[in-house]
Length: 435
Image (cartoon, rainbow, N blue to C red; front, side):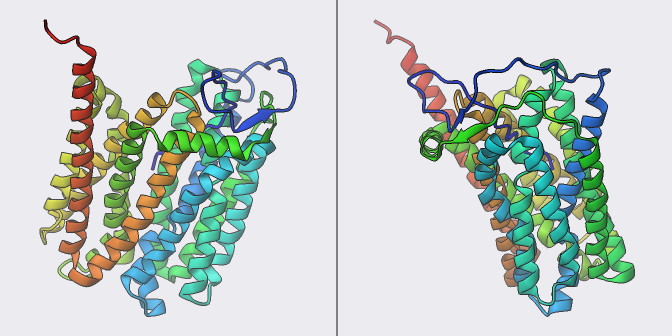
């Protein structure tokens, strides 16, 4: 799925703004010529980051399509098995911000390479986990390692690619994320059906290894990166400033709530479809994640929605679409469930695109840290949604999971309505009272 930008380039602010969390250690150097289509290195860079995105998101969600098989293998409940996903996304959420700071000191390319290497190594160990507890622990380590990739990739692109080519380069990286998340789930579903979940996770590990090797040999050296020394106190002040901004906090909450719905639905959907009245095999359930392609379309359309309806209007449309999908998915007809998933996915990706882009526009200083905080909230929402969705399903079936999703949707609506009232009040305050 497309992540919020976590580019962490050095930030220049005025004297009244919070001190930059990274201080450069050398005088400004001459800027090297940046990459663009048609120039040497651009195609290599594009393929390298595409491969990195495929590897990262195939690994991150590798167990999501396998949860029913894991429950059967370890005699675990849906809630217990869901931790194999939640531990990875939760660890990523916690480590995105510190990894973004470390990339300022040690370099984007080095951070991405190290993150992928550790994550792939853990991915090759995961199939041999002897217990559910060991599997969850390994997945947490894997998620923490993967946090270094989104924390560095956007900054690398911002520093090495010409501005006019930046959107296309970021789009290819995001495409790698989406395809990795989707293909990893589909691959594990079909391999597990034939040879079991351990073979499925091994297949994802080998896919990620091939992508990591390709990344290592293709990624051009960073020529415009300037290392800096970390300033933890300034970083803490920047974070505190963002968390004191009511609009940013509302955007973080919206991202977390949207992801709560998405995490709950896609963590539990496998359990529902494997049971009657559906009784689908593991491979077919894995193929359900092809619905993610709908999200690619709705994300791309988010900009046009904002231009036509405004930011809050686009959010209302996204949340209405998500709610309609949740309600439709309650039916016991497979066609209705699939259409519900299409609507949930389209609404989620549109809402996420609106909220994440609004963060970058709202933050006037410390944009890297503002985006990293959004990603932290986003992946924490995934962890909470996955776990609570599974617990709800265990307690009350799919209807309970849908109720949890609708509660999160209500939270988005409430926050957006409150933001609308605040915006109107601010506009009235700017208009002199009639005399």
